[in-house]
Image (cartoon, rainbow, N blue to C red; front, side):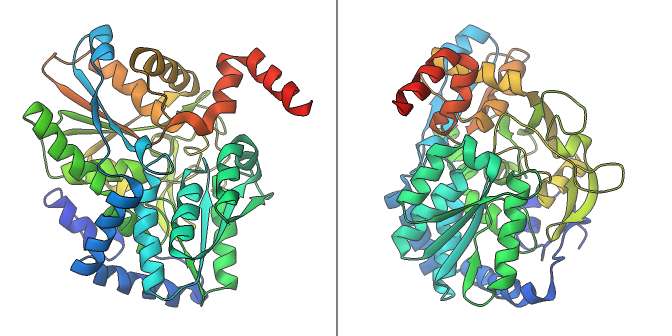
Length: 415
């Protein structure tokens, strides 16, 4: 299917899995029946009024939507230039935007009669949300997590286990999100009939990219209503961090056909431009096929998946949504990077100026938004998607901001 730059929203949701040359369904034959079953069910629920009513009811009653669209008045005055607003997805139950697609997919799994759900997670927010929704719906839950992420995101591991999920620390490869995805796929290959793979971003084989986008688009829909209500107009700029692409697509989707709204995705610039020092797929990656789909991936000179790095566990995935790959090629979405240091600085500035501590993933978006706000006129509106809150990053940020406090805390735990 050839996509154009008109009616983008409709094209994405009826694309049959291809977005320009990207997307597709490149998986072992044993998984095809399950994916076809999910794709057919997704087509049905997109227009099923009863399902959608239940989805939105659960978003309200369980997750706590709508989330606030918060003016950052002190930061705006401090920086000068455009008015800054924060879409506070961190105030969702479980602390991030991830619960939006977890609710939708878990309801779909229940409708398909699946009793077991598996998931992958990096920062832990997707795993935490999956565990919470599975507990509410009475589904067995197993979450795969790279060993490095398992260690650096211990609060979320604890929450998942408290909710009854089995958390598996993956020891293979780089022991990060990419390896957790591979482990989850292996599990699904071994248990194709009774298991639903609740994939955590707008990546993977068809129908996951479009399905994840569909369940996340509530974010942009709320921003549209809230910005018109509070400002009398749409935002001039929407900024979101980009790992796999779920929070970016959730924010961007409703504005794709609004030519006046500038959309900017911010990738993890890490600690430099050398391979293994960043996770900027769209700026430094190459097209390829991996984990069931065609998109941009970070690769070495031989075409193998390269190592990644980010201070934020949720941004160090090796690939990016095929939808975003196409939107990058067409120019509808701009992409840039923020470094580890810039993200950490943004955490501290937002905390001290506005009393809000964002997740390190979201801090990448704030770092860039703070830059561009100074370049825009004071009547401009810049909206930033705070995809999650920062409690999960406690031990990472303490190591950077209060290393002595972290050392004392560790000593007290051992006493």
